[in-house]
Image 1 (cartoon, rainbow over the protein chains, first blue to last red):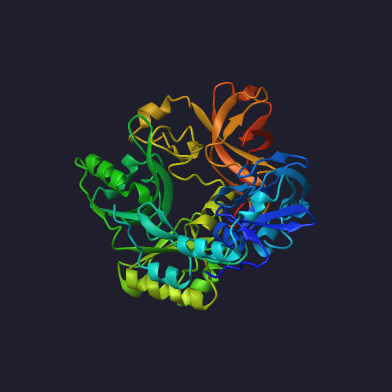
Image 2: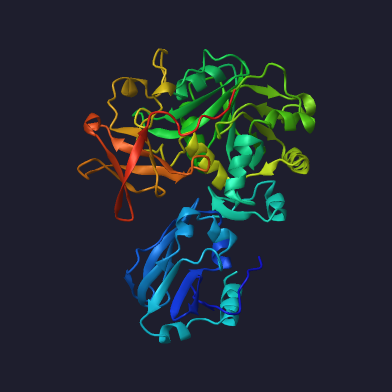
Amino acid sequence: MTCIIPNNLKYTKEHEWAKIDNGLIIIGITDYAQSALGDIVFAELPKINTELLAHQSFGVVESIKSVSDLYTPVSGKVIEVNALVISNPEKCNESPYEEAWMIKIQPASQLEFDKLLSPQEYNEYITNQK
Amino acid sequence: MKIQKTSLHNEHIILNAKMAHFAGYDMPLQYSSVKEEVIAVRKNVGMFDVSHMGEFLIEGPQAISFVDYIITNDFTNLELKKAVYSPLCREDGTIIDDLIAYKLTDNQVLLCVNASNIKKDFDWIKSQISSFDCKLKNLSDEYSLIAVQGPNAEKVLKEVGIKIPENFPYYSIINNGLEKDKLLIARTGYTGEDGFEIFSSHAFACILWKKLKSIGVVPCGLAARDVLRIEVCYPLYGHELTDFITPLDSGLSWTLKTNRPNFIGKTFLSNYNPIYKLTKLSIKNGIPREGYEILNQDKRVVGKVTSGTMSIQDHKGICMGLIENKDIEKIEKYFINIRGVYCEANIHTKPFITGGHK
């Protein structure tokens, strides 16, 4: 299984990706995650203004067989939620890094973001998982 | 426990299937996409390796009366070459397993049982057989089983050279002459669609699988099989049916034929008031999963989900659940507790989908 790991993103061991965009942190799930889950048929995301702590669950994605929690890698307030993921959860399989971003967070600080895995580190991590 | 492999295991690996352990076997969970596999079975045709299922042969002058005695459904009055679905119960009505019994000849009956229950069933049946003039054989390791399911099942089987008789109704079985005694073709399945289950030698199963694959029959895994059976509300042992409840608790009163002289569980089940009622529920936003609580209008827990999934066809959460029978008529509204949120559920009196089986 080859997974796409874009170079411009940061990663977590729970298979989320994060990137900074205009001072906000955008979070989604990785290609590896969507592929391991299979057809994603349902997604639940937080309400806008929800305050989250790093490593807290902010929602779930469900494949036909399983429910998986989504964890925020950084603390902060939810500023935007991607309604497309809720209405068309299959987008998580089709376009995990673009169309199916999940939430945008106003981070409490950038320190947590800086500590996330680099693309190389994440690649190494999932290679060892197989 | 050593994990077993079916004769088609290598085919699954070649197809890059996602594999999982099920009932002691390494089985394909899905190949391409569960959705595509489900749609193939509903609209066209798909095939499943279900070789993990158990096959028992009961043979002897009293084979038929013995099977009639151990199952709750009527086997004596069934025509030759026909099959019946039935629970296998104890004296106290609790369910050991559910199975399909095929009346092959006047003195031969094939039982197809759940993989996870092979040993339990075998021991139970053996313990009951002594006063009957027949013998029990476990042929589970000798037979492979491929299920070919969907509206085009008959067409593709004919295309690969399997003879299907003109008059071959649902729940029938034939002994195909190609490979005497070892090739049995039954018009049965677990998807609600028309389809066939082909019991054969391992070598024949590999050839058949490859031939069907080469003409475009979609390989389907256990995940699709689970969605398909939940959509048509077929129970699964370990979920809707267990060692602790009776067929009357789990929606199988239609399989209980008490107008027969004697069968195991008759006395108990004839006077039994069910504790549970198997109920079909759907929700718009969310997927009910096994173990989730079912609540009434007062938010009191009245039952639990036994199987749930997302219906591929209707795109809604669907489930079956066991609800306490006491005061069930007073329930006005149903809710399912999904991660702490009470989602209102619709009750269904009919299966979520009507399959196209003949």
